[in-house]
Image (cartoon, rainbow, N blue to C red; front, side, top):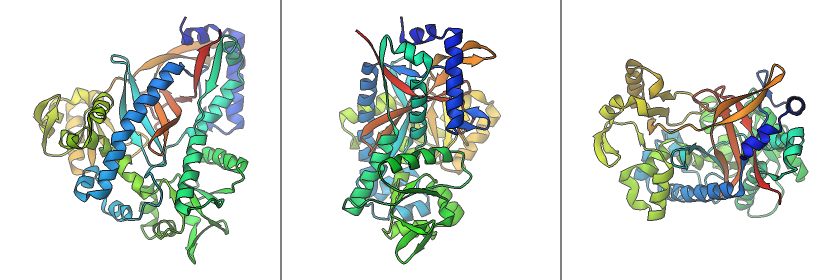
Length: 448
């Protein structure tokens, strides 16, 4: 019997009702309800064996190595860096000294399992402000106290996959590298007042408090830089755990804003800082997979790129290769709508994405024209996997196949620390875009 079947067999009506009631009450108590909808709406977490976890960790490490090589070259070579599509003001901020080791101390890779090959397809590198780690941990804590998990644990050992600790550890390591000592920082968690993810900031604030660290949640528009110090709520802050997007900060407040100036002058440590934009750009996957850059990678790197990055190119009037054949890129895009996706180079929440197989020819042609006029990438369509997940609906268990993604959190571009899994019945698996439910992942092993 599979792990999924075993779990579902335990969902007798009374067990399922108790489990649903507990999850609903806990998420409401924790404030993890958005627009009247709980963060998790199903009765099963994602279940993974130890062998599956180890294989995922191996693959994540393999694809991170060429990512790091690409960033190092981008630091040294402005012509190469141009492939990532940084805007002029991003180039200006990129000149700020990198005062800790890795440009993205915290990041998240967004993969899809590929059922036909058993592999993974990397569709985005969220290298700037990866969200969800604290939510995943809160969901794991919620599921650990459910009646169905207690029953399941009688036959299987169950281990959560903590994610928040990896984020916090990376932020504090960056601070130590920045500061050069062990002084405890005062931390500012910065984002706009009206973002729906404030509850996650509060979870981090609580976690920092358990470590004896003071953290405040503030809107960057209220921060002031004076006398060489950045001030928040009447006190200095030394370290920013940044959740506001850099482009939103600069677009809204300007490049001369107090927070930006404080970072550029080395008065405060910003995590993730300005250099993260290189790997965060969706064009980073085009840089890795473009045949023009193959010479900078070794055989192991090229194997990882080939196995995990779907064909991706920056949209431009050029010739390139497709499965070993030379093609004229724009006519190729127009002819192969059914197998391609267009994405803006730097956006989030599914905004601006056009799935070629969901639109007609005229809409696709318009999308290609738009992509030529602004920084966009085109990417080969990947398989979207699905699994059955049960929910409590009108007094009974209803099980539906739901599409899911696989999004490991990464520390310092090297280590996998936790996993985000989003479920959806829509084509875009993104909670910001109304993508459905989030579930924690447990590593399970049969008891002897």
